[in-house]
Image (cartoon, rainbow, N blue to C red; front, top):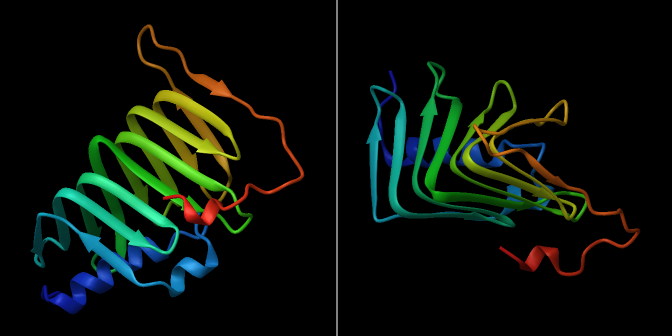
Amino acid sequence: MFRPNFLHTSLLLTTVLVSQPGFAGKDDFTQKLTVKSENQVGDGKNRTMIFKDNVKIRQGTLAIDADQVTVIAGEDEQVEVFIAEGKPATYSQVQDDGYRVNARANKIEFRWEEQLLTLAGNAELQQDGSMVKADSITFNIQKEQVVAEGKQDKQVVTVFEPKTTEKPANQEDKP
């Protein structure tokens, strides 16, 4: 039986944040994980942890800012979903190749089993200087596939930057 306590809460959140191989820089896994929020609520019976109001999550180069972050675990207490919500919620992390991935949307959802990142409402995904803007964006991390959808009269906007041979300077220093 899952019983909420500080250790379970910490392990639950740590599992969701450090288990994102598609985005993560390897060094992030060895860094201290810090979660700041005005409020937090744990529900062991429903296997959820909710951080509310001015949520700031940091671990190495990983930065998540949101109004609310919900972490949901499955029967085996492994994280199934994490949802960051805000106006906008933001996700940022430096990849192993030195480039920063930035995501922003009203709702950012990561489904661990499917390795699926979904951005909904004013969604924007930036990587290597290129950018996709749409009402919703789904990124399959394993397959490296992006699907972007517009809404009514708003089209999907994609901007491609030419590749350079130099890696960006000081990418690690930017949140």
